[in-house]
Amino acid sequence: MNSVAVDDSDFVYAPGTSDAEIEAAAMEAALRHRRLVIGWRLGILVVLLGLWEVAARTGVIDAFFYSYPTAIAARLWELILEGTDEASLWYHLWLTMEEAIIGFVAGSALGILAGVALGRNKLAADICAPYIKTLNAIPRVVLAPIFILLLGFGLWSKVALAFIMVFFVVFSNAFQGVREADRAMIANAQILGARPWAVTTAVIIPSAMSWIFASLHISFSFAIVGAIVGEFVGARYGIGFLIQEARGVHDTAAMYAAIVLIVVVVLTAEWVMTRIENRLARWRPPVQGH
Amino acid sequence: MPDTPAIELVNVSRRFLSPDGHAFSTLKDFTLTVKRGEFVALVGPTGCGKSTTLNLITGLGHPSSGQVRVFGKPVSGIDPRIGFTFQADALFPWRNVLDNVVAGPLFRGRPKAESYDKARDWLARVGLTAFERHYPHQLSGGMRKRVALAQTFINNPEILLMDEPFSALDVQTRVLMHEELLQLWSETGAAVVFVTHDLEEAIALADTVYVLTARPATVKSVHPIDIPRPRVISEVRYEEHFIAISRRIWADLKQEVQMSTLAAA
Ligand SMILES: Nc1ncnc2c1ncn2[C@@H]1O[C@H](COP(=O)(O)OP(=O)(O)OP(=O)(O)O)[C@@H](O)[C@H]1O
Ligand SMILES: [Mg+2]
Image (cartoon, rainbow over the protein chains, first blue to last red):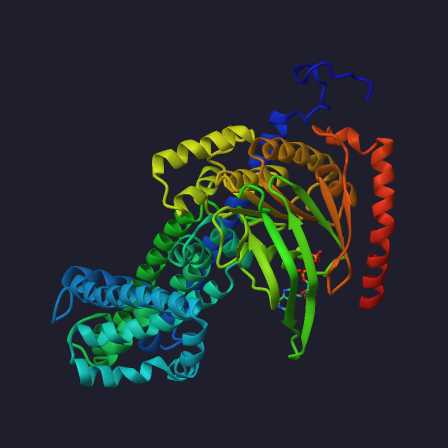
């Protein structure tokens, strides 16, 4: 402790404590942590799939009902190459996606619109509250047969179901987000000269955005649920239809293959959504601890 | 009429409803006059009604009785000549510094290019040119206050209302902000109503200090501050004269503070 620092470059550090060394050590530690995490993840995956495979092949679980990873992979490959009797796998997948995406986009757009409108208008919100509560209490999937009856076996009955799955989730989050908008910030905008519409677009909607995004994350998978349940109840194409068909002929491997496919789709959508959100939320302080 | 006062509150009362539905007065027979270009500080015990008073002047709140006039006209709606700085951070966190400062002119429908030029100009005046692309969370508390000042001053307010604007800052930064505020104010000549808990801050900045009573607030006493300008804030508080004024006003304020703590206990 008797070295006097004249300027930074002359400073004598204890061995192993220079800036460069500390930075290198921190980077090393972060890398090691990452490798460890990924290693464990892969390890667990291999063990689980391996156990499933072995258990099914040795008859511990019934391969007829539970199938097993290699059979599912093979069936998935076959489906990719040959499709089903009705259409190619891609057509089925695309149809389900189309239903989900239209329902998702319409449901979230109208959900945001309704949430913001009611969030800004206390009288309307109070009047509508019991109706919304009641509608919200309907388990969405019971509407599937009704929509099929009303809109037929085609695209639109599934779109309607996906829409209704998404709408209420996004609506209630947007509504809540609007209600939580900071009073001082609103007053600030008003005094700076914002008219009501500018207050809505410049303060209310941006501050509700994190609430809205939280709901968008879950609601894409809800839209998929809506589309697939709709297909279960009545359809000629689609992943839900494919699963129904496979059940009819006891083709469990195909059922699991379809599930794998859907999981991949939902995870991809989730990833895209996170990317978009990160772009839009550059203003936010980084979350601690990550 | 150049000699109509900037702000007049005449026998103003403001009543609120408590959560269990009872009406109670926050302001009672409140009378206050702020001349054009005058710097007024309001000090009073917590919860007495200082923020409520400012709200009445902005037009965001309405008096239960009495009259609030701005430049001789009764307040109806938000007057564009008024600027307001808040105690809490009221910057828009999703806008960068430049877009925060430019908000006012754009809200008021000024042309875009002109507004941005003006905003850059104001950022230069508060010394934040290098930070125009930063978001509020990337700034220190003092820098955020500077942005808030630029955001307010860019609208050329003729009346500036400040609700404990610097109470969240550390002492050194606060003194810097005081000097900055006085500098900006002397260039614009706006009438200022500055609410604070800090008596020294009030005396150092203001032409006139109003001491308010505990709730319901009325004006208890008015103290003209005859310290000449320009004032050097970092030194003025050590002058004999300053200390004498400070002692006199504190004797007045102390009773009210004690009363409001008794009432709260
Ligand atoms: N919108 C409101 N509804 C009901 N009561 C209110 C409302 N606004 C203020 N009050 C009450 O009026 C009183 C004065 O509030 P105000 O915010 O004006 O005090 P203040 O002097 O600014 O206090 P502080 O120094 O702590 O900021 C408080 O008792 C508060 O509870
Ligand atoms: Mg207050």
